[in-house]
View 1 (cartoon, rainbow, N blue to C red):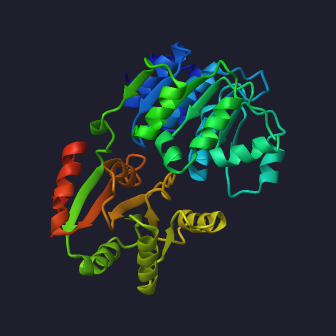
View 2: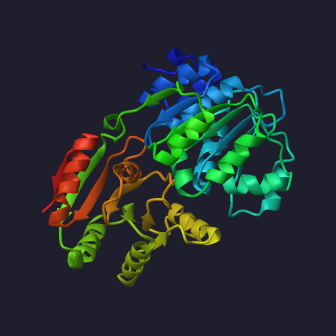
Length: 370
């Protein structure tokens, strides 16, 4: 499909998409949008971050809801504050030329009273982290009993972050005739059990192959060095990039803090984000990065979910990720909006076999840097 009109998307939504340079539907959008527009059933979409999932479920939910009904009709659950903000922002952009639809994002880290005040306005779509939504429900700050469509985005991450009980509770409070759209990168056993509990055995499922998800404008590189030399070589790479900005990925919080501390000691404008940061501190770091006061962001995989900043020239893998899906997510932070970017891994000779596994699974080729 060359355009969204062919998928059955209405003109007003197409116009808003085109204004945001979303012209040709991605694979997941081609597979999901026509199905969800025509079928009032549960659905599972398996695809990595960066494949266009928000537009894939956002268009059908916007075309299906009734703007004249001023009650919450759609609930989107997402694991992190950043993803909630991103989804709500995307929905807002897509409705620019349509009859007004009000979407509200609610998440931890912001004063709950501010969110309660916002929810007094007519709201049709609520995008929420499960924990904050439970807090709001306990305070009777919103009514989700009329919700007939619930979207579980990044469902595997929500379960890995311990939100299963909250999800069970939330599903129990929405309209009994609800339909569930679930989007996930992986389907671990815990998620399989959840789908078996709430969805029919023959639930419609689409999977986007990994071969389609890696941006062709990213140049994948690796450099062989031993652990004790790694920091110095990473520093030399960062210095070679001049004023360009990027992200350095580490596996653990301690490593992220250590790398950021050592970079600062070398006068690099760097700071770290990880899961143990207070939300206000995290916001402060992200604000500095967006405002270009920080040149290098050092991040863990989970903490980087939802980071969407244009103009990043490179991604450095200080350590390779635990899961192949995370490599896709990491490298996808660069080469946005049609630009080119570098994804470079600093590995020991023993880790070369992991590079080969990533190449084979993602159908990409790494260039060895000497």
